[in-house]
Length: 249
Image (cartoon, rainbow, N blue to C red; front, side, top):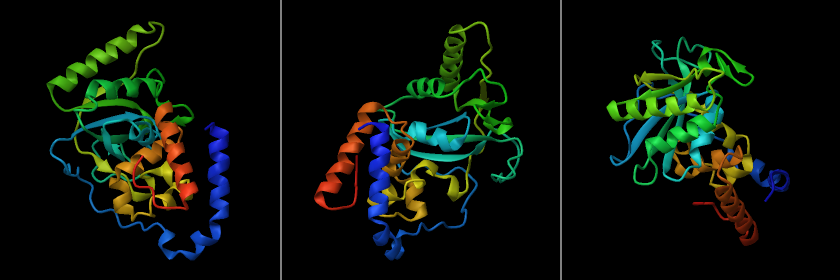
């Protein structure tokens, strides 16, 4: 399904179901108070984490959410010294994304490949129209092997062009602070129909949902083409069957 057709479909269905959505009090998204500013424990011990900064965390979270092997994503702040940073008061932190992934399905090296291909590491002090220290490019490392892989990948990236310098920093991971609820799954929240299709999850469930992570990438049209088509097919199937809840893609 082409991008224009997908947008028309989502817009049409949103309008067609507006009366249903307005009547359903469960449709409102519940946003609890921010619970914690310390790194959360992994829910599955077999998972690993990677933390990367590549510009706005709205887009960064969507970039990684659709990858096979990525289980969850969280937008947040890290790389600075300020305690309990907030969106309007970041201090010296960078907008970042924490990626929880299954190392049997995807590895740190592959995540770095997506990192390099998803932003301009040669742009100084920002990304695209977003200018500022909070949008700087950083690979956060946790251990010798990650440090080695990060350094090697940066060297490879630099060899692609000697006319400009790769500005990406490689930095030891410190505290990661999850961003406020309104910044989590931002691209997905711009499409109320998709939220409706997965059952209007409470905010805390939405943040931790693997399905929401994938749909966040889908909503931003950042999934691999094959995955985008699979999700298109699932949505069309739901329409044919009469609006059941979307459980997986």
